[in-house]
Image (cartoon, rainbow, N blue to C red):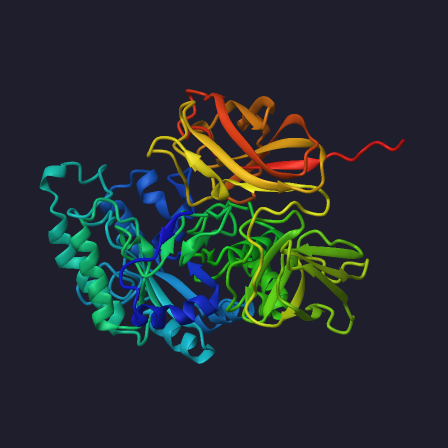
Length: 579
């Protein structure tokens, strides 16, 4: 899988990352002048995310500047904002000090285009936030757009007002505004947890390194996000609203929205449910990824009630189940389960049930002795457990007797208290129901160098019939198996994807069929990456033991810019008909 370990693997970097790895869950805040139009310009709704309205509506710089004279967030209450984050269980706050529109939401001595000098509000909200974060024990962090600045004639991004690219000198902008403002936010507000740089664009490697060195010189314990560019951040940043399908190597964070926008849009009511948000939080933790969840306050300084309500719901779940999120590591199993996800830490394995088993539950492959099993939301209910194992066959089985009634209406967590660090059989195990999950990241990939397993867990660059995926698995329960090919699609770019003809072979037995876009179920309120499951038919496997499964393309849709985006194959054992 993809890796982003950044520069410097020494103890200093590990020390900087310690609080961030413990935190797991943070609040993103996109707040700026764009909250005034709230997605509307001159009587029209502007498509796209709210904070990009200056770009999407091609607003001239002087016209956009005039918004500052109307910006007066009289209802802003730093303590209230911080309490919302604390009640949600979020351990750090990342707020936009300067977004792509170039307006500084802090007192910037090097520029008058800021909230203190250019607005009737005339105060620095970041000072109040710094004070309240310190009171609440929450890390304050700043977002800063280092490459794009649509207000500056030398910066990147604005080609509709500053049209002559030959007159632009990015180094001049870097020295005049970017570096001075980064210094300002690192020296005016006390200890800062991290600087969340964004959209490196055409920034040169040395310029990215200069920014990173600046941050670490002024605040040695401050982290630098992966979007500083060129893979040199202290940790990696996934794409907007991107969630990993498989485990990632290194340290990662994913930024996500509660609806479709980041900056406030008055008419965006595509709110994700609390159930969905909790599951995304669990999925991130199970992959070792931090979850940065965004709110977009209004121009008056109010976090929308719909956002607060959902964050409270997540916080209520974390109040009971936080042990299974904070300070945890990714699942030791390299594949997902139909019933849910797993997180762990030394001496503990946490089973997050999306689907409650209603009675007996069996976990394969755990080699540790389990001392006790606990239901985090129902600690008074005793969970019966038994273990059996065969050292010779490396077979390990844990059986739990769980209550039939679901103890938590959202994600139910059962903690297994272990002897030692979690140790599991990481090979592709056939589950007790006979099913076998073969994720793409565990396959042997053969093909051109341009084809790889992407960070979302699917194959990227598969555009010809040449590549092959091969998995080795051990079959214990023989019989007839439904062959399901899993593919993914980015809902933001559906035209990039297509339907392809694929062939799956196990030995001499094979099935062929169409897989991809035809089986996508699109839902505007779900994660950026949609998974399709394409049923190719049935293969008969009657010989126990080791097998090789191969997936190849018989036809790749030439219209699909993203190619064949396979994320895995599932073999589902068909139930034998009763005599």
